[in-house]
Amino acid sequence: MAEHQIIDFTVFRAPRPATRQGFPHVHLVDGISLDGDVFRTYDSASADAIDDDLDDGYVNAHTVKAVKAAWANGAKQLHIGRVDTGGAQTYAQARAAVVAAGLKGYFWTTDTRVDATVSGFGVDNEARRSLYIAQNASADLLTTGWPAALSTIQNFERTAICYHDIATEVYDVALTAAAGGPNPDNFSPQWMQDLKSVLSYTTSLSDTQANFAKANYANLMQPFENQTDFFSAFGLNCAGRPIYEIVTEDWLVQRVREDVAARMIYMLTTLKRKFPLDDEGQGIIQGIIASRFEQGEGTHFKSGQIYFEPIALTQQQIDDGVLRAFQAFITLLSGTRTVQIPIAFTRTDVIMEDF
Image (cartoon, rainbow, N blue to C red; front, top):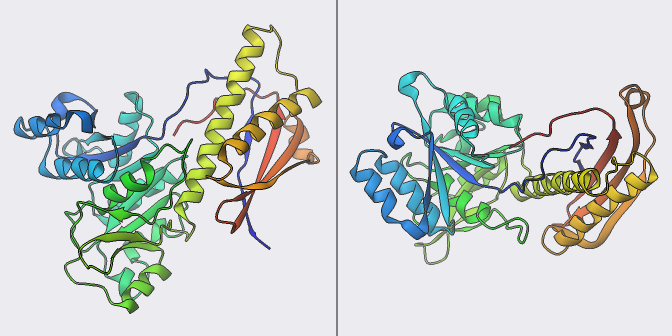
């Protein structure tokens, strides 16, 4: 039987504006000024901007390397967030500042290679609907087991580790750009990608080391037969799940929430009706979800592997004011996992989460 993964979210009575959420990539960097800004976006259409900022002292050489690696691996732009560790700011606090300034990042990478800092950011990220792609140079991943200094994030669903023995390389940024750059509305890429603008390991890995890293759910750069070009192998998070499954689930939840909010606003403002918390409302939600499933067929989900069924309310749900509930089942394109989606109707006013 296929392994089941559950996505659980609630349809709320009070809609937020149905703003379409993108899936941007933010790279947090210490030791830069950005001319006083909290974050800055570098676009491949204006490549001179990053070099000008380097000349003016606003960014460092690492930032330039990260931005150009992102472009080389297919990203059209990369957002650089400022971390003020000189002002005792943590990377998690820098993230909060970036979000407060108006950038809702989904993919996050950092310039830090310090285990404690990576762990701290991973802990902050785990409670959010986003992905953190970290880079680590610990040889333990290749020889013994999970590094003790990273034990806090072992088995985390929303953090992935990329191994590179050169701390100044940007394997994490390159992989995130290559796999996370395409619009998930149209495409669900694997996280085993060709990589550009990243140097090879100082010492080539043996088959034994590579197998050990895979057992530890670390992502590796592996050479093609010509030994000069590389691809990123495995595509796993710290819990051993394929990263693309997380992206697919987050895409579905985000888009369904936006669709539901848009329908609620239409009913309130145009039809002058409240959203019906009955069979009619359940049918509306089912139709919205089915349309997103249809959009994802062939890219995210297997065709013809979708069905809905009602579910009985628990006493706790009744006590919490839930009125009706049903669930949908889909099979991811990989065919290895069936996703169960419980959907509840409630009177409770709740603000939906951001990335």
